[in-house]
Amino acid sequence: MSSADLDNTRRAGPRQWAGLVVLVLPAMLLFMMLTILFLAIPQLAADLRPTSTQTLWIIDIYGFLMAGLLVTMGTLGDRIGHRRLLIAGAAVFAVVSLVAANTSDPALMILWRALLGVAAATQMPATLGLIFATFADPRQRGIAVGVWSGGISVGTGLGPVIGGALLEAFSWRAAFLVAVPVMVVVAVGAASLLPNPRNPAAGRLDLFSVLLSLATLLPIVYGVKELAKPDSLLSAPAGIVAGLAFGVWFVVRQLRRPEPLLDVRLFANRAVGGALGVFLLAATALGGIYLLFTQYLQLVEGLSPLKAGLWVLPGAALLVVVSTLSPVLVRRIRPGRLIAAGLAVQVAGYLMLTQVEAAGGLPLLVAGFMVLYPAVAPSMALTTNLVVGSVPPEKAGAASGLATTCSDLGISLGIAVIGSIGAIVYRAQAATTLPAGLPPEVAAAGRDSLGGAVSAARTLPGEVAAAVLGPAREAFAGGLNVAAVVAAVIAAGAAVLALLQLRHIPPTG
Image 1 (cartoon, rainbow, N blue to C red):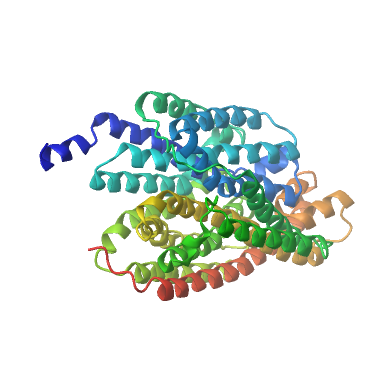
Image 2 (spheres, one colour):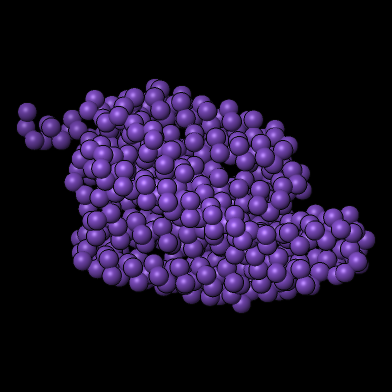
C-alpha cells in the first residue's frame, strides 16, 4: 500500500466527525455545570436556605470531586473501555440531575452535586481518549482536540448565560434538568458512533491511592472554607494540615509504585510543571472572581438572572475569540510570552474590580470583567498542547488528564479560597455596619451573607429593609475589592512563572 493510500485509510470520514459532536457535548456541558449555578444561588438560597458554608460546598464540591477523580477514571477507562465508561457516566449524570432538581434539603444537594462530580469525572478523560482513538491522522486529530478545547471554553463561559435564561423562564431546578436530554444524546450517540478502545496492558487501579488523593484534597478545601468562620481557630488549620500530610503520603506512594495512579515524575519536566502551574494559578484567580461577579450583578444591582447572564455574554464571546486566535499567534510568539502577556492583562482587569463600589459600580464591574476574562484564554487554549507535546507518546494520556485536572481544580480552588476571602471581609464589615435592633434571625442572616440579607429583607418593612440592604451591599463590594487584590497577586505570580518556566519553548511555526 502506498503512503497516499495509507493516509486515506487513516483520515476520518463523516461518521468520525459526527462522533466528535458526541464527544464535544459532554465536555461543554460538564464544564458548564461548574458555573451554571452561579446565577442560581439567590433563588436556591431563598428556596433551600443553606448556610454560607453549605452554599460554597453546593457550588464547588462538584468541581473538586471531578478534578480529584479524573486520573482515576482515565485509568479505569483504559481497563474497561472509554466508550463504556462514557455511556455509564452519562446515564448516572442524567439520573442524578433529575433527583437533584427535586431536592429541597441543602445537605442532600451537596451529596447530589458530589455524585454529579463523580459522574463527570468518568466522562472527561473518556472524551479525550476517544478522540485519540477516533482520529488517527495527526492533522485531523489536532483539529478535533482544538474543537474539544473550544467546547470547554464555551461551556465555562456560557454557563451563567444559559443558567440565567433558564432561571428567567423556570427556576433554579432547570439548571439541573437541562443536563438530562444532553446526556441521553451522548449515551445513544456514543453507542452508535464511537469505538471502544481498551489497553490490555493497562495497570491495575490503585484504590488506596484514589482514597489518598481525596483525603488530600477535601480536608484542605474544608480548612479553607472554615477560615471564613469566626470560631474556626482549630478546625481550619487542622483540616489544612491533615490534607497536606495525606498529600505527602500520596506523593511518596506514587514514587514507589511501578504503575502509579498519577505519575508525579511528569512534574519534573520543566514545560509540563510550568504549564500546569501557570494554568492552575490562572484558573484559581478566575474561579472565585467569576462567582463574586455574578453575585454582584444579582444581589447588589438587583438584576434578573437573564439580564445578569447577558452581562456575562460580552466577556464570554471575547474568550472564544481569543481562544481561537491563541493557537495562531503562538506560531510566531513564544508560548510563555503569549501566556504571560494575557495574564498581565488579566491583572489589569482585577485591579479595575478593586475600585468597584456598591453604588454605581456596574459599568466598571463589567468593563473589568471584559478585560480579565478573555485574558485567561492563552493559558487555557495552549496548556494541553504544551503538556502533551512535552512528554513521550506513551505518557500522553496521563499528561492530558493532568491538564484537564488543573483547569477543573483551579476553578474550584478559586471558589473556595477567594470566595472565602470575600465572605470573611463581608462578615467583618456587616457585623459593624448593620443597624441595631433587628430581629435576631434577621441580624444573623444579614451578618452571614448578602444572600441571607436579601432574603431576610423581604420580610421587613420598606425603610428597615433598605437600612439592612445598604450596609450589606457595601460590605459585599468591600469583599469583592479585597478578593480582586488577591486574584491580581495570583495572576501576577502566574505571569512570572510563565516567563521563567516556559521561556525555552519556541513558537510552533
